[in-house]
Image (cartoon, rainbow, N blue to C red; front, side, top):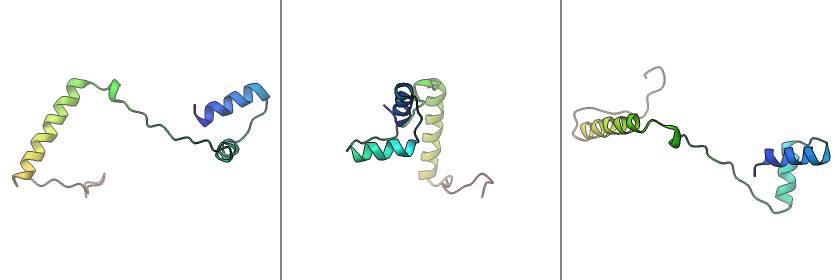
Length: 80
């Protein structure tokens, strides 16, 4: 259950809104913990396209290891 879910339940039951930070502070005071979940698109991807891209990446890595090409991890959107 997320903090947003707790806020919605509180609003429904009590009829008043509270700020997210208020709920978080209360949960922390009560010794409760929470974490943000990481959403994955793994189940929504095109598996065939994904496997093809993985093969292309593997080929590029092999070419880089042999010295045929140089791969850079430090290229920004302008290409520099």
